[in-house]
Amino acid sequence: MTTVRQLGVLTGGGDCPGLNPVIRAITRRALNAGVAVLGIRNGWKGLIELDIIPLDLKSVSGILPRGGTILGTSRTNPFRKPGEAERLLQNLQTLKLDAIIAIGGEDTLGVASKLAKQGVRVVGVPKTIDNDLSSTDYTFGFDTAVNIAMEAIDRLHTTAESHHRIMVAEVMGRHAGWIATCAGIAGGADVVLIPEEPIDLDAVCELIRQRHSRGKDFSIVVVAEGAQFKNQPAVVQGHVKDDFGHVRLGGVGHALGAMIEARTGFETRVTVLGHLQRGGSPSAFDRILGTRFGIKAVDLVLAGDFGKMVSLQGNQIRAVPLEEAAGKLKIVDPELYAIAKIFFG
Ligand code: F6P
Image 1 (tube, rainbow, N blue to C red):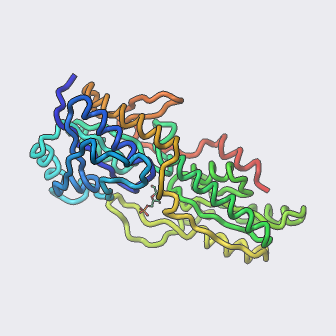
Image 2: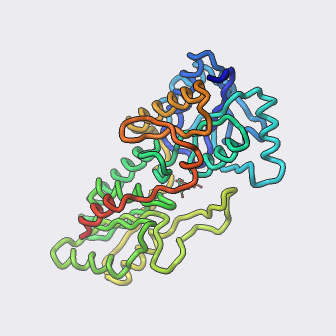
Image 3: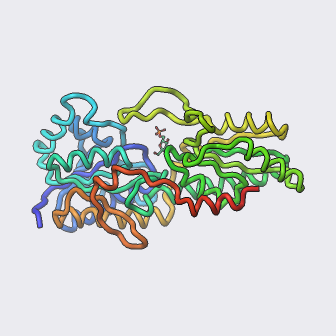
């Protein structure tokens, strides 16, 4: 056991539904155990700039159903600019923070893992709508995003059918097509295209033609933003990179829609769901998972079990080494994608 008097909590990277339930659970569990909680604003940036707010029962009251994060977020990487990591370490001392809980995806947890190796007492909580973090079956935020995408596909279905059109829905999913696959299966999409497999345009168009020839004169195509045409790079909105080297993806849906229309002659329309998938109230699943993760993260801190990430394995909440979780992406299970493919056409 380690004595922890004061705990810092931060949210980094893209926001997602479920962050506030985690912050709430951490704060309540810690305060119950007599540990003070400081909210670090805007991810790692807040630790570099000493942008801190104390969290008490009042500050986390009523936030369970709220999307976004009351702490704000950023994509700041303290290891990018010289001197920032040192300032961060110094500020940990100044603030008398005995431990940090970092809530984030591969980038935020990658920083947490590096800091843990330097002796910082840190615990990670896995967040991303993309569900692409390894060592956990699910990240919170994913379930809400899948439900939003599924509802969008349902809505596209009725208008596609009325107008006899091809509807392309572009969903998020930078490295992995979890949202596309799960929303595609749940919404009954005819084609699901993901970053894990190059887009075979001939096959997609042939399938749409076959549907038409058997009387189905509309089709729904779901494409993840990170899906790539054969031997082509990902379609991007711009080449500017963030602190972690990521370019802004987006546009594959429009490129694909234009090609389908040109090749098949069928009228094709495109909908990009974008940040709608990241906003708004978390689903019941994400509220429960976020709450369980938050409680477990504090328990690890209280037990002095640092350098770990909380994780969902089956229906159990466990702890895994941060290094293991942050270092590897979890791509779509081929068995699951095969199910999405069975319904192609
Ligand atoms: O990592 C989650 C994610 O939603 C990706 O799917 C997407 O590429 C990225 O964040 C976009 O984030 P932002 O628009 O906030 O930079």
